[in-house]
Image (cartoon, rainbow, N blue to C red; front, side, top):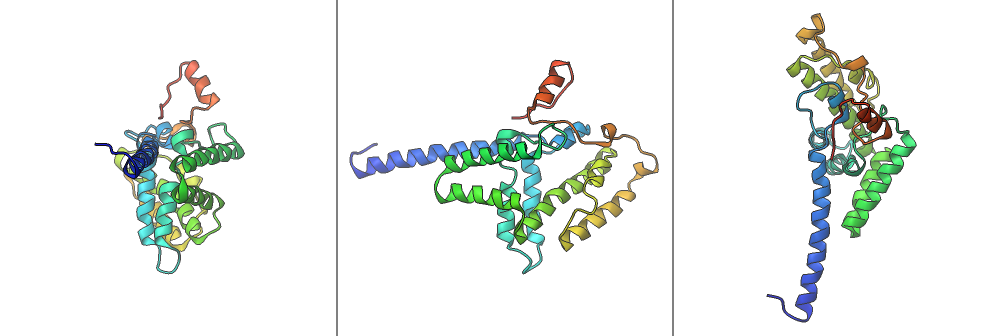
Length: 235
């Protein structure tokens, strides 16, 4: 039951906060349905979502050596770094969108999320995103490595479980890791890959050795759709 005075003002204020909070959470929820572009193109069955990808990245933060970086900060960066994709989609270098345009779209999306959440929390989300993009802090260095390595590890698991051969995911990440932890894990995965049975004679490969389809709603994607080619829909 509503009452007049201070209590009613408090109720109205909390209703406003709750509405914004729910909109923010539903924005995050879109990432549970947004499939990762590279896996879609590569013919992976039941490909992971963006939120799947970020979850394992956050778990990787537990493995950061003591004193090397702030683990909690790494976890926050991991679960925020792709949040803008809830609005712009999973844009890859093969989507026909320049790096500059991609960054502009993502920054604009994060500004909208910042304003939606509001206050210190909204600003924290935006600052975490920008810290990851700039990549200057120890935490950002680890999480940027986690981002690429999680893709390598996922590629290995798909190759192992679905008898695929997806060399491009390994070629584009060869020699790029900067942290000793990820360098060591990457070397181990690449060794494990050589033991997979299909590499005695590949059974199935990703198209043209690339992961090139765009699930970001680009003009190129829309043109392909108009010409009758299939595409993966995203939220």
